[in-house]
Image (cartoon, rainbow, N blue to C red; front, side, top):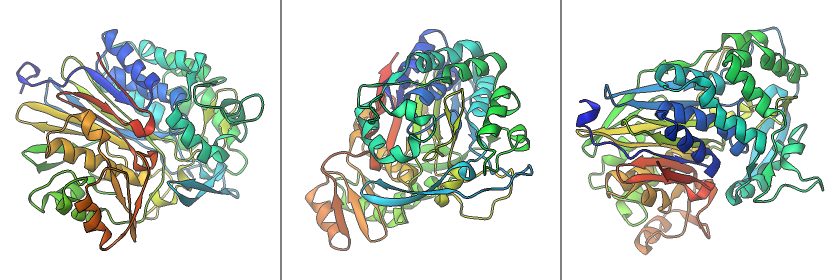
Length: 470
């Protein structure tokens, strides 16, 4: 199927912050394609969404190429360090309250894994990009230089995660001169980050792995970190063969090796026959709770989606973990804490191995071409948030915007957390066997979904998201 014969998604973006979305729109207006815009947005998130991600994080991208009708998955998630001769020191333990639950985290230099975002952005651009690399990096440089306002939704999260944000150079970013946390609407300054991005624009991602920025990373982690020059030099983004699931007359394409097996979960849900949104359909709600039932996980993430005028689209998800509280001095880079995200380690890993992740940006196609590009943030709530959005779009023909706004549930081992808006029938059915914990309003705990369908984009209000048409 050629691009000319396809039903195209509208050229648009959806992301977790207005500045992230604006970076994508600016690149599309400059003649860039979906890859160019996605890369520009990803680098901009370092300045616009530092509570969730950053240059030192890692992630995944799923790209739909209209001219060939093919889907490509790119793995640039973090890797396990230890190829050098460094030995891990004593980590720092933190307790963070998220969604009303106290969660134990490990931070500090021993929690830092090998970063992937710069290599992933460069690989995606080389494979599919159209514009010059320096032009693609320009929006992120401007955002880091000028500063980006802290949104209400991100401020609410900052109140909980501040202990991991403010050590070392983080104090200058997240604290006002009076020593109080920055408030919603305040500009977040990123001292030195623009210089780091300029170096990446000039020298490519190599500077992050073997150049000046690499040397600064090693200096920052010399006191107890495993990260070595050998680890950084060995890192590569990896192209994956996507896996697929046929359901509702369409095909879902995803990397398929995510820790929560979203394709398998969708297949189990579809097996009940008639499926509708769980907020009003009791059989779907019951089945969803059954297949989601697992201990909650809490790695923080952000997601973005972009579609261009030629029919290409990209869904991209990245994460910093909670953040190590260790900063690359002079370059405003908060280092990841992925080795401290214990729910990601489900088997013995060796130095150089990729860590596992729940992230699963995806595309859905039908006989007319691309139907949806979507992804989600929220650690263990990625699967539940994304599935409930997809059910609304696939089975109830909701727009991306409406599906993203629908109330969500998340299954805990002995309870079900819910947002307001579920029907009495569903509440009665679930309440007969589980304790129901109902939030007063939509909450960031339930994840952040970004999606673009044929009627337009949808960005999650739970995370202060923004969507825009070109």
